[in-house]
Length: 268
Image (cartoon, rainbow, N blue to C red; front, side, top):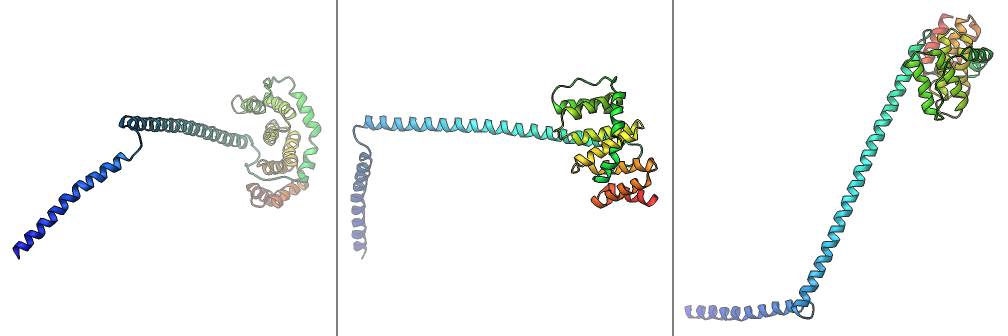
């Protein structure tokens, strides 16, 4: 039995010995079948392929680098725009706070407008025109032709320099020069505030009513209407004051101005 085992093992060894050369030959045949021509030609071809791949990889890397530069540039632009937007928002907040602080006759609010306010303000139109002539001698800053720049310059006369007469002159000129500006409601509201401070209540009511009549959707329109009612009350025109306060409550029931109007009505 041992001899049979040895014979079997010997047979297996012979088979493996024969298979190894045959496998090597087949592998060699497979390698030699790649491409055609001499070994030098095939090496040259492989070098060309390698160089082309390297060039393509370099182009892809350059494109990725360019794309990254564009992304970085866009990111920087977005950050700059966000900063500028935040500055504008903060500036508007400061303006509204300054507007409210200028008023000495009422607590600030935000509410709307109506026909009663326009009618009440119309009585001050002639007085407003005379007010313009009173300020003719006040030096206003030269207009640049840019609505935003000129508006900011006029507001600076109020907030920074406290030159109210010059501010009135500048804002009146601005209102006429830039009728399509989105700052028209604010400019007219400023004029109403400034005339109120000067004690010219008819002129003040005229400009507040202008905000209500022409820019009813402006955030300042509700407050402007309420202040028309305050002026009517201070002029002892109780009937008009009641009508205006009721208009505030009717059109803007959820506003702060409506709450203020309700308190005023309770005291009339």
